[in-house]
Length: 138
Image 1 (spheres, rainbow, N blue to C red):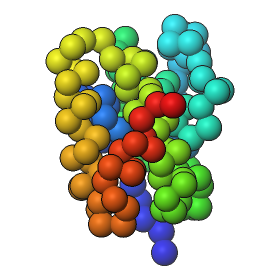
Image 2 (cartoon, rainbow, N blue to C red):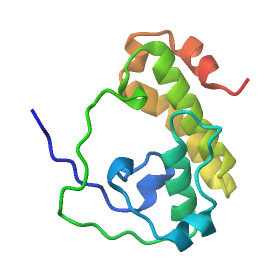
Image 3 (spheres, rainbow, N blue to C red):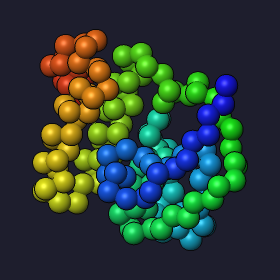
Image 4 (cartoon, rainbow, N blue to C red):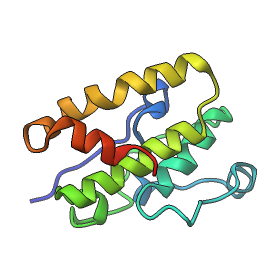
């Protein structure tokens, strides 16, 4: 069974999660150079890091209706086990903090993570203090 996914708008939501489908995203070479390419030290969220930096530089996005990619839901960011989720959330949180450009956004991030974990239903599976401690930078 295949599902057609469409990217969301490149807007405020980019501060929290990637809204682009990385496997079907093309960017101009000059934008790639301006943004600085991918951070290869990240294992899971290097696309989010790149897109967030582009968003913060006021890059624009054009959406096309053609299918340019087909992918399976088997990648590391699709995993739902505790270790994979913690690793992914830790990277996303690190990226958000690294590129945080104002105090208000920093406060929003402090509120976002506990609420997001509740939204994802994570609190049902693990004790919240244990998971939140795991998300903190070491």
